[in-house]
Length: 298
Length: 281
Image (cartoon, rainbow over all chains, first blue to last red; front, side):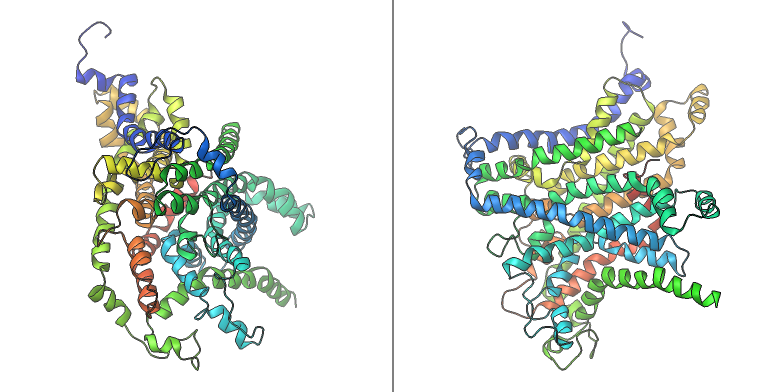
């Protein structure tokens, strides 16, 4: 073929050119709306741009200014709590859920489908349910606790600066538990039944069977689910935006909501881009761990 | 006696935890649903048990279509989700097939690149992307979402389809090529019909994510009635001084319903798609 006129037909027949042609549509979209904005974001973060007005190059000033910004400190701390505290809860609850769903129970299919709902439906909308559950006046939780005489006053779940971060974490745990549940369930179903039976014949009790037969089979999926969950939770936006918008007194701001606040509400888009980019090194670490793990496992 | 001990064991180890999970995971939906069918006055009446319905009404639902732009948001969400899913799915079929079957320069690099793109969160990009949208002059149009959503969908969908295409025996293709079929003919006439379950998984995944997306929709398409359901409900239905709970919950239930419905019809495909990312094969 080489040296002869290249026709469209031959381009579509040769593996090397066809491969590239087939990758093009997706790659173009990813370059234009993901790779390019990423680099544009780096540029913006090095300028004092405001929305609608390209600014001057200011070097690393946005990044260093943030280091002495107490709200940014609070934001970084909140993000860490939000991403690291919720994941063990989601993993543990998800493991329990998977173990229960893996048993032979009546109506197991509809039950499996139903408990996945928190993960499936639009988060912004289901979070509105939590918005009401946490409401200072209409909260059903407050009503219940009052009814049983546990509290005298309604609880201000989202308005109390100390409680607010726990409340948003609870809603996040609720949303993420089914993801761990379904992922671990898939891992459990890959455990050959003969292994359990053999271990039972050898006299292993339930705990030993769990520890020595089940755990080695699901370690991998739990780790992958946990890494994905850390990345998603770390970079979350909507749950906090709907519940608190970062308040009260910035006690629930995470990187995403603070970048929105500074970059769009306060129109300081250069500074906002810098806030978002502070996520990048941490996200990269988790992404690399995940990639290395997946490659090692083949 | 042995039988009753077994029953007690099952009760403690299975049914008790099961009840806990069902209550914990489904209570918010129960709460949203009952509030959505209560008259507003009943919410205030502290004599009533709030966990039950005294009087039933559809007025919160009819209010959405009479007094708000909910119908418009529904139309917008449908258009954006359908077009963006079709676009993403087409791109992903091509990319997935190329990565699964063809040897071409840079294919390894592109495979890793697509996987990393799956991990790039929208919060990292939304500010510069807002500028890109503005300079393309598609701000506040359907295109702003139709063209940006695929960046969140193509990576996972092509990964999923690549895995699916690889399970189809190569011999089928080789014999068709010996019969003179081109690669593209093989893809369209043989591979795609054999991949319907994989295509359903990927399609449902894409549609659900489009329908549920919030951040890009909030920023790129949010003026007047040009909103998607999640953005419209969150921005327009929460009012400072009026009694909005009934209609807010009705909107949340109604906006979640199509996704819950699709999901319950295709639960098998959804789960296999969802777990494909975490479980190999």
